[in-house]
Amino acid sequence: MTKGSGSVLSTIKNDDTQHWEVRVDMPGDGGIVKFEYQLNSNELREVKGLSSSFEYEIEPGNGLINYSNAKVLRLVRLTEILSNGNLKKI
Image 1 (tube, one colour):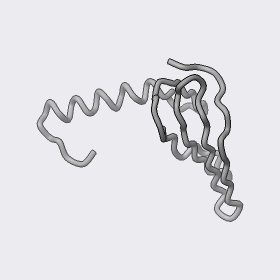
Image 2 (cartoon, one colour):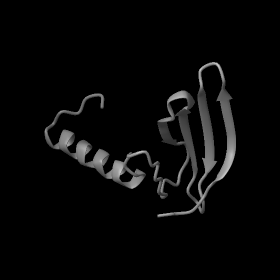
Image 3 (cartoon, one colour):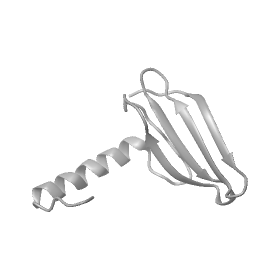
Image 4 (cartoon, helix red, strand yellow):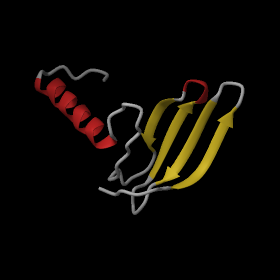
């Protein structure tokens, strides 16, 4: 698991919609991650890994769970779906 600060690759800020997108090159071989914020509500809207490797940690704060816990929860849910034979659009 890679920890540390990444390097900002690009930022896009739209003052009309108060939307901000930041792309970060994660330390080591962590890949590129996109963060989307809603500035007027200080809300983290989306965190999305855009390229591999996906071996990094993100601690978003504001009471949100960290990235590694989110991956575990998603894997548990997918396992439940597959074991029940209910593979549909997730």
